[in-house]
Image (cartoon, rainbow, N blue to C red):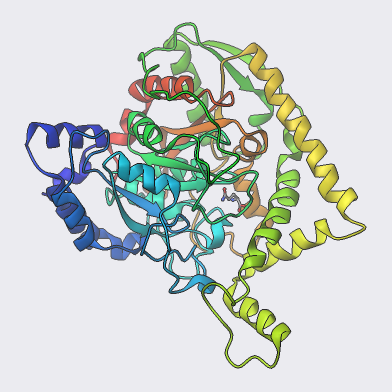
Length: 483
Ligand code: GLN
């Protein structure tokens, strides 16, 4: 049954409904595929086939995602399952409740399945910051899958999952989707409840889907979107079918090309693929308009002030009293805190906590944090201005192809630059998606390139319509050769 794992979610569902195979068959097929490849890929930190099979046996395939297993990043709480956030400090921690996104997946009939590897507390762009294991890019296992949701992207690319959930604070869904040749959607801020998503930077975090089709991403978003009384930043909006604008063409769509997103220093082959993809969009009927986002150059700097500030506050709760790791035989309370955190957190997390504490400290708050908030407003206004002229923006997702494991671990600044095209969307709260747009040969291997579309806040239906039209015309080569 392992060929079942090549199906998209919508193909899987039509098979369920016709009675060609059952949800239990799909779980068994995933099991076989995971046994076959995950020792090498390393996408899953944990998986429980038995409980997935039990859920599959009673699944109602008439529900919107009835019987569909969905893999979960290890930062989203699923009742009774581990939630380590890729960190030693939460080793052995079991979630006491379902995140709202999980509750909604279950209501739609889906089966939350497995725990996917990630950079510790979602801080990173390569999944190398996981305290547990390396995840390898299925296209070339000497390379990183991107991050921080590297397990979620690699599992979909390696056909070890039909769809997965990740989280995106500065690019952590779109960048790994791009490097793994799959589709990854970051919804607008407020679209999906963050309740039960372990917080990294609360004003930037969003949960979103990965899949091998845009339509599947829309179907998962249909299930998880919506107002939640447990998250005051979730928005109360009329229910929407996010597949409703999939017309297959781009007639009447004005697509903006932000000139600041075609920088010197990006991989020339990536640039060429993205330029070809933009021509394809034009062929589908889009009108291309050059736009400017003049504050782009400040996005990374602003992000590393705001995200670290919020992280330093959010991570204060890991004190060894309430959750996870606890230092042995402390001499006093301060020693308990210090050693618990020293032992439990990895070096990138410590770096962020120190940076964040610094930018919030008295005397520096105005110079760094407050100023960063002001520049964040300017970045948001850049997008508001651009969206007065165009319906969506089109640009690269990542400036580079997947890089080699180990290549950037000692160069945090270079690692931070991996998100140069994705971070501003989080600062502005808009939605974004990465769709594969071609393959580049590198050292005898094919590596995928991602095309990013950015949409107005809460304009996911249109964004997904645009991405779907592009996918039909331009992503087939990549999706058909998925390893
Ligand atoms: N790579 C970025 C960081 O390290 C973004 C991470 C994310 O989106 N969670 O913070």
